[in-house]
Amino acid sequence: EVQLVESGGGLVKPGGSLTLSCAASGFSLNIYSMNWVRQAPGKGLEWVSSIGSGVTFIHYADSVKGRFTLSRDDAKNSVFLQMNSLRAEDTAIYYCAVQTYDYWGQGTLVTVSS
Amino acid sequence: EVVLTQSPLFLPVTLGQPASISCRSSQSLVHTDGNTYLNWFHQRPGQSPRRLIYKVSNRDSGVPDRISGSGSGTEFTLKISRVEAEDVGVYYCMQGTHWPPLTFGGGTKVEIK
View 1 (tube, chains in turn cyan, orange):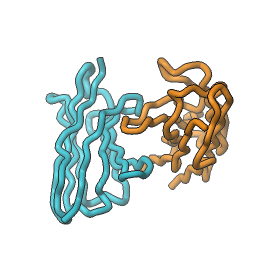
View 2 (spheres, chains in turn red, purple):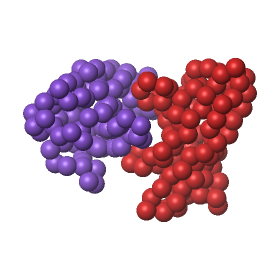
View 3 (tube, helix red, strand yellow):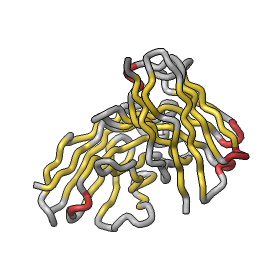
View 4 (cartoon, helix red, strand yellow):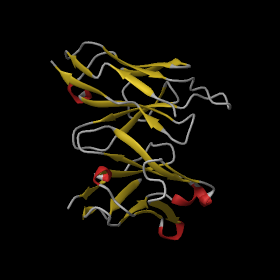
């Protein structure tokens, strides 16, 4: 069974950092691009970042460019979202999703507050 | 950036009756490869989004055939022929033709009257 499990969310102060992980099971991540999408409380979906298989590309939304870094470790079947200089507006549930968004994780909540 | 505009924002429906959601794009979603990368998602309260439809009209596995997608260019529609209780939640369209950035519509909330 295909499964994606996000972890690493939590409460962090403005200006702080967090690293989110997305661990895949039931399939090998290495041939797929992976994506992060976030959802602020009570709001819609916002694409955050994507990484290609073999790191052929990495793209970021303008709202996180220069602050977030997406990476992957195919040996660990995982992707990682390093989030620095966090702001209140980064507060959201962060979901990882496989290439064409047919599989999503359950999400991990990031709260940025003093 | 491609802007997707969904309507209505809120859709009260009667069980057993049809429902329709519109998604309009600020530019044509036909890719240079000939495909149109317009997907539909359904999100129930407290759950992750689930993809229902990909490339305009292709139903994902397990999606009932009373749910269908159609459209072309800049105008797309998700239709539910007979609404059931499990259909409540928020529906989003998403385009992957012109990215980055990949963009979502603002969402349509479906509730039972």
